Length: 423
Image 1 (cartoon, rainbow, N blue to C red):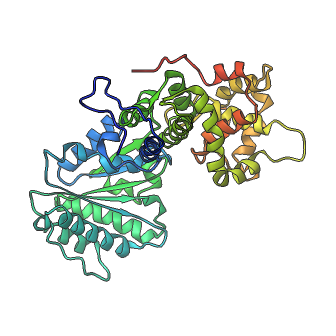
Image 2: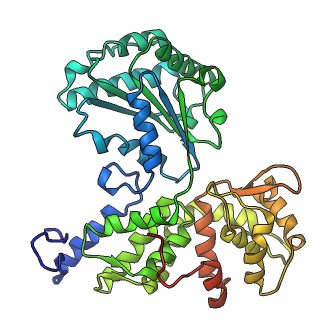
Image 3: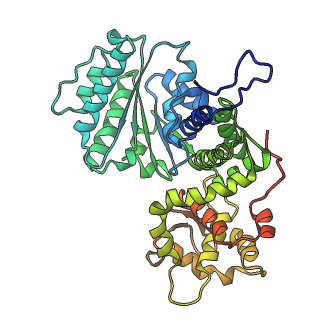
């Protein structure tokens, strides 16, 4: 039994009536909004430009992709699904995925990649497309290139190396760059996609300048409001649940462009509604879900938050950090001290200047404050961003839970627009 929209019903919905049906709906919501990287193409929202660039790289001989950005912006989800939209038309995709780890060196990582490519071919009935050897104990870039050259010219082999930033061995990074260069020089059709947390390609790829020609650099920014709305609506549409406009706007605003939090908050709010035997999620449900969110994330963020705001003297560290979390930012999450003025003034209920919290910003971006913020640029042109973007929604929701933002300030700071959302 499942409570999806019925295709032959006038209303398109099947209301939950029994305890069992409500339980099924709860399971469906938990599965659809579980916050894990998305693998089903129909549930992937936005990112059309990035999808197109990745597809073009695969189609173009010897191009390779470096996909990078903040943690939590959906890099793994994008690499999971970018090719699936055209897989029914282009039956020749062979996609292998491996995760890099700090324990890996070049041979362990790339032998595993060859094994995954061969397994992918076998699992999809395309074993003849990848007649490659995988029984190596160690391997060189040239040996990998020769094996990949055995793939059928009708195949589109793709090897995705996720969490590449966790690879610590310098030789492994250097040899991977050599491998990409060899594949390019020999016009080998396999596409390598390196995925990792980084602010720039230089943080992720060794000697990237020498292999610049074959690389397609795709920085992934935070999602816009329209894309976050699509995350909610695409999942909810598979069930009888609905989100009213105010609830949706609050979730989107609290998420700060991070799809993980859009999913997590939507799930908790929907579960609150289900417990109250309602299929429409309201702003009250979002409010109630915040307590669950704090409870679920407390272990991950509590120590960092305390390190940043702890002091033996009276201070406004908590207010300053909350203002940073609420500050207007660019698409990569960076804000200036001037962006903090308005939210800080609203929180403390008095007009303030940068001088009132400037030292707090220095603290937050130092060891004393646990480096909770990243600071970029020179004095007077500095920009800031949360070191762990996942901390930002936590700080906002914790501030709301502690009553640090009154109702008047919330309407301003959360930019509530009575259900007006971008289309």
